[in-house]
Structure formats: structure tokens, C-alpha cells
Image (cartoon, helix red, strand yellow):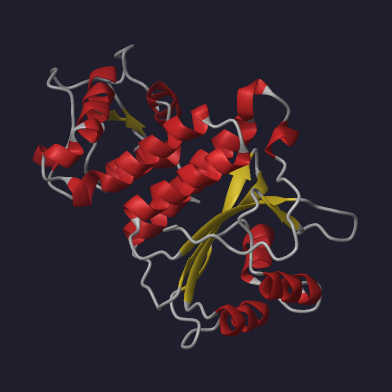
Length: 286
């Protein structure tokens, strides 16, 4: 998966437009060079966010190992941080907006003290980078004996009552995209439920809830799923390669946030509050 891939892809734009240190070309014995994981830590981002920067051509590696692994100078990383910060004033919004959204998600997640804080930061990031997504939520895994793929909502912003009841009733007898994502640890994406093959349970929910496309990304912490990032569109929607890379990086940022837990407290601090019967879904743009 991209989130665990140290060998970052070559950029999609000319290198003269990418961020790189103005220093002379680096050599691999340069002690200032940082590997991908160290560079991501230096910026306070998930490494899949760094992957997105390289793939979009916003950042160019200062050197590469014989195996093709990228290495970066701190000066290049500082320049990337500055570039993201001024993107809205430079006409680079389309190119840099996903990176800016991920950086803002990382900052907001570090400040979050309640599940609602983290959910709202996630909604804002997705809406900034992927206009047209109608609903965003985060679910946490809650495995039980005989039910390893059970989930619970991060916040009170949950499914409408009928959708929730049908989901719970059918989850053990028909396949849902959420189960597929947790079982395979791969994204479950459908761009048009009416035209593409989708799990039977997800097709039924689409008829009840009247949605037409979805992207569900596992939030993976320490080689196992900690939850799901769920994005739904009321209309058919193409999820481009850039969209998918962004959502993977957003799931990575959420994994870091969930591992930290608010205020240095226990992981259970992210437990969702009890949900009252009749409490409806809150859409991403509300």
C-alpha cells in the first residue's frame, strides 16, 4: 500500500516547478539527508502525505539511494512547509490544496480534545481537497468474539436510524464495503453504485439512503485496522488517482491522531458518546 511504501514515485510535473533546496546536489553520505519517515516526522505529517507531495511534483527528492528510496534536506522540507502556507496567495490552489488540507488536518488533530474535534477536522480537510463529497464520517473498530469487523462511530454524527438498523441487521448475512475494507486493509471504492459491482449490503443502503458513490479507507495503525474513513457522494463521482492518494494520506493522519489520543490520555478517550434514538446524520457541508 502507498502508506507503507518508502520508494516514492517520480513526480507528475516538471522538476523545475518542484520544491527543492537551492544547495549543491546532495550525496548519500550527507548527514543532513533524511529518509521518508524521518522527513515526515520533521514536518509533523504522515509519510503518505509526503508521498502525495512527491507524486504531485510539489517536492523533489534531493537524493535517492541505489534502491530508489528518496532522501530530503531539511531546507527542502522547510521550503515545502512555507509553500503550503502561502499556496492560496500564489495561484497554486489546485496543486497544493490537498497538501494544505492534510497539513491542517494534522495540526487540528494534534489540538483535538474530543471526538467531535477530530471529526470536524476530518470533514474540513476532505471538503477542501475533494469538493462534492456529501457526507464524511470516521468509524472505529470494535471487534467482539465472533464479530471481528464490528465498528462504532467516532462521534454522534452517525447514520440515519433506518440505515443504521438495516446495517446492523444485515451485516452478518450480506457483505458491506466497510467489512471488505477492514478484512482486506484496502480501500473499498465505488464510483457509481447503479453501474458498478458493489457489495449487496452497500447496494441496499444506497437505495435506502440514496447515495451513488463511496470511498472507504481503512485507518491502519501498527499493521491492523483502527477504524474507517468513509466518504459518500449523492451522485456518481470519479475518484481520481490524486483523490485516492489524498484519502489514503488522510487515513494515515487519522491513524496518527487515534494513536495519540487526546491530552495524552488513554486510547478509550476517543470513545463515542451514547447516541440517542432519532439523532440524524450530519452532512459534511453542515
